[in-house]
Amino acid sequence: MRRVILSLILALCATTLSAREPLYVVNGHIVDNINDIPQEDIESIDILPATEATIAEWGTGATEGVILIRLIYDSPARYAVAPYNNFTAYLADNVKWDDRMPAERVSLRLKIDAEGNATISEVLQSTSRQFLKRVTQAIAKAPRWEAAVRDGHPVESIVLVNLLLPEGKSLPAEHAVIIR
Image (tube, rainbow, N blue to C red; front, side, top):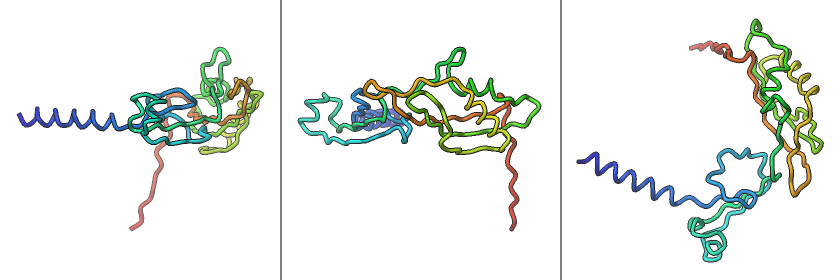
């Protein structure tokens, strides 16, 4: 009996807590959450309190307020070059790194300009210079991206890329020495 009552209380609390979330509006469109929006893609954030005017404009979903988010683009940059459905797949096929070589990882911040050209704006992580050099060469030879679009015009944007090769291998564990 206690478990049933506890389950009902937890369910009621979960319903009450979920009802207390504000309404999220991204570039004029209502979305369920904003967890997947990279911070560098956000141009501005406005918080509207739950006033009569806000509820009249946005409906009953705005009873806990509205968070308006404006991204630096209306649609993000896309890498849609056949046969690849994303840029990581292109890199995996075009970086010369076979199964006999050790596993290596690189994480990059790429700038995609308005013409769709990709350049490295920041190296976030690289396990070796040799691997980074080969990834850089593959990026330089890559076909153009579809640039991000804002107000109907192509704009510059930032894209994060993570690559681990050879595929299916994992990086060796790092060893640490503890001195007491």
